Length: 381
Image (cartoon, rainbow, N blue to C red):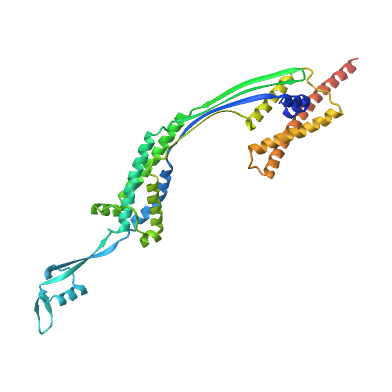
């Protein structure tokens, strides 16, 4: 026989007491909970970090246009003569000093000089410059809010008070239980804040890297006016994938400026009449049956009717156990339940077989020893 407590066997041997117990049980369960938790505002870190590569793409291939700078200069200072220069001279003959009648060569005093320069002062570039500025201010503000938050605020306390009584045959059975659990995890919360600050430091460095790129420095030197909403929906902003992600970040910053740290508090004090009370009632019954094993006469004599009642009790017990499994694991499929029960059955079967084999081995050892003793006595007689 296994030394472990066989709960099913315990119920089977005491099914009459269990029936009387359940019928006469009077119990009450009081529950108190005290829960506090600070959920730090940190989702924005990943959001900005995910968008930065798209901003980098824009910075590496910025939007620009060619700007012509026209200037009338002395002929000796002209860098090159273009078609536009000749057209301008033909319309402004006062700039001509002399014309060689034989060759037709024209000698101007001054001529139009055109310098073509790339200009990065576009609306799209100013938008990205403004976005980086806004992101830097946004990060600083969120970081300060985190520093002011109660990062170590965490409490989870639970208490149950259970009283029960019933009369089983001639026995008065009473129980009184009070259980408290307390959890405070300030150290982990502090470490969590430090980890968040490390992630923010990496994000700040990414922003610094953006600000060191050539486009940002060029726009910064121009002292341009920052872009303000509403945003102009240019073709580049609408159709370029990198700008689409940049606009997601623009809108995110506008919508999440406030501190979104959450202080969750929940306090309850009530008398439970549901599943929790049912579990504790069943635990009360189990405790009673365990204590009842101290009685030398706790084994019950079973007649045919008792055997039928026992079968019924087994079915009820199985149904209750299955109901608890389903209630605690509502997502389990039929196949998963069958597999779980099959594995448990195989394990218990192996355990029982191993126990029986052990008993048989010990029993055989003692029989062999007894037979050997008899053989020795016969040989000496």
